[in-house]
Length: 412
Image (tube, rainbow, N blue to C red; front, side, top):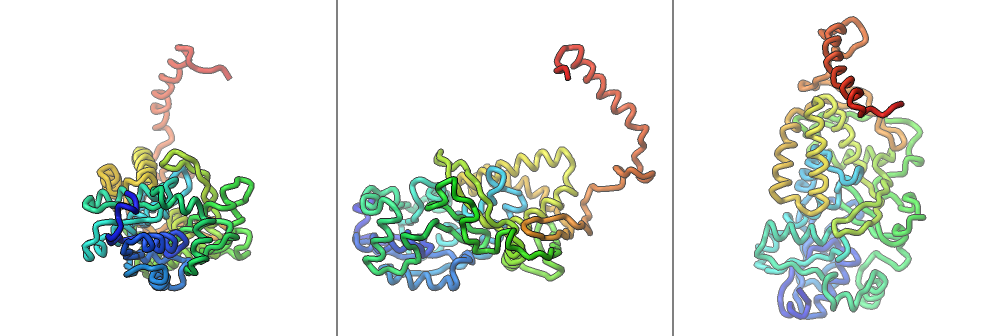
């Protein structure tokens, strides 16, 4: 879609209130569109008052601006990510990826209530978010057209990059925070922050170049460790440090506790974007890292070796599905339901110690589905008889000898 085809129409723009949002809102207004700016409240740590975004968008020319509460939906989705241990390429907790689906689902009722037929977003044509917005909208509301200015030649002709956008906003006296001196870009929600672009595009820029917003780097964390406990019931954190919490509050409190000890702060990754190019990100996800590590300690108790293999495969696949824009498709639905079979057994109280970025296991208690027993003890306890292993090892030895006879064993 191109702006010249949309003149005179109303468009619902999903906005965060940042540089792209301000630029696009004014630019579309200048091109004869009526812009309704919609923001999902995701407890963004970089916004002291999310309602301020409404005012900024109106100053940029939006005919209407509204903030819609998506905090509970994001917390539930983030919990599913933890339950599935669904990280991408080993470390990234998919905090921005999962938030895009929540944003679309949160804003759609407002779009439909206003009978708007076009949904717009400010995701770049080089990134993953454009696909997430597009496919989520296509799956949940196929009747809507999706407009992306960053794929419109007219927009690109006016704004090849951040420099031109900042100059435009400064000339128009729009309320942006970005400056030409700002060394990187940040995307924020309750689950975590993603920092990229600017100086971070250069691999000789260390991750510590980023100023943390959800905590401190490990070397700046307190010299005194802190104990932390979480009670999971059927995969849901119901109490932190023995104090009952709802899911939203659990994430906010875990963010604060983990952040002050440098847990999940400054995670550097060079990753493979879905569009086929590599990008660099520096991530903050203190609460996800803390709760995620504690949840893995529960999984260690309840999964036998066959279940663990299945779970790890499901986890890897779901992590990719989230990253690559398929949260709502049949494959993700099946993966989430399969993971649910493990989740229902994830009940335990886990206690850890936080110290300068580390999460150290202290204890596990009240885990009714734990498979851990005294059978592996080195002491004279438990039902397992050492001598019973004689036949087991002899059977395994048959195939070991066959490998040697078949000259398939490499000499030491």
